[in-house]
Image 1 (spheres, rainbow, N blue to C red):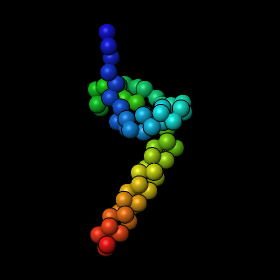
Image 2 (tube, rainbow, N blue to C red):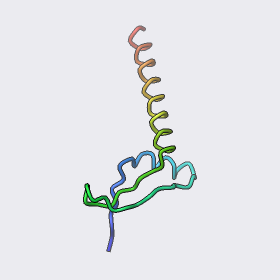
Image 3 (spheres, rainbow, N blue to C red):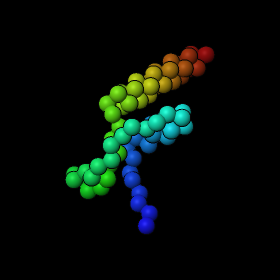
Amino acid sequence: MRKLVWIINAVEVVKTIKAGKKLQCVIAWDEKLGMISKVLGVARITNAIDRDAKDAKETIVTNEIIDRV
């Protein structure tokens, strides 16, 4: 029997695994969602937010430069 797990931040999980790093997480039953959830630690989540914010800032600056040319 095959079981599926819904990973909310799947992009972060894939990037971590592709980088050859170990993935530390907690898999537990979530009563509110009625399903199994996978939770990453606070440090990994804040790092992902910082990385995504940096990418967004770079995109905004690049688009402004392109618009001015």
